Length: 427
Image (cartoon, rainbow, N blue to C red; front, side, top):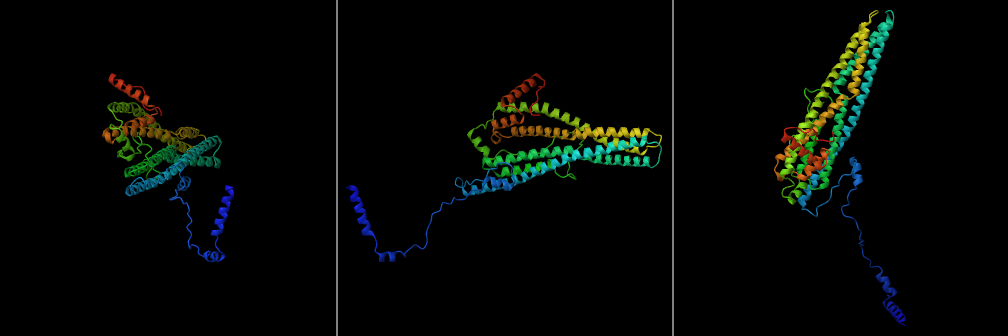
């Protein structure tokens, strides 16, 4: 019964409210001129991270600029965005330099292989010609042809060796490898600065100075800007700005405000001084000694190679019928020159010299970093615990091993001796 009553009520109400045909005809023409259809469009769609990286040629993830205008004032947000845009511009230049130094390093490594093979083939061919000319009985055209050919080959080998020993292709390739590594390191540093957020103009200035310092330390051109391959004294490489950066960016201010002493105390300062004594007394002195030794060896080999091929060229020109001494001098000179070239360029003595120079620069930078930090006020320093952790990682040690090294250095200084342990466990 209740269901029947409800259905009857609904039918009566429908019939009573149903319009007449005339009413439908007149009311069907009154439609709104504009229809408002709500669409959900996401405001300010963010750019695709993958597409951004592909367009800019980056090989790994890079933080995308975030819109923080809702949290900060308009002026602060605009300044922060402008700073991040500058850092991205520097980041693009750094990524381009990484690719350039990598490609040129491969090219100069090929130079070393191709030039060494070419010079040795010229020298050995000339030596064989001299031996063949000495074994030919009688004079005439065959002897003259072999003499001239061997003399020309020895002369060409001498000229190529002079150029090769001047530029040191293996050392050039090592320079570009080091530059590639350091520019990648700078690239990661800039990406970390952007990812942490709130970069300052000081970060932009520091990144610019680092790029220019690396450009000066590892130049790309050969003519006019090439580094001196045979300096009078071994000197470590310098690839950092001459003026140290003051740690005052906002990413360290929060840690300073949370801890009054900023992680620094007398014990930590003494620990760093003890570690620095070991770096100066053991690591830097050892690499300076080895660098000077390799530099002297490389100089001697660079002089001996062209000198031997030059002597062989003179000996081959003096080969005559019945005279064997000139041929002996030419053949022995060519054999010795081949051996010297294989030892110098096949053994890549120039690369070893550059490696020691780079290692010396690493310890020099470490020394400057510790000394500059200790000279600053505690409020302006980087967080002490963070600095200690970075130092331990650079030396290939754990924090406990770093503190043990500092204690050994302190004990040896009290006893008037030097510790036998090196500070670095990496190299």
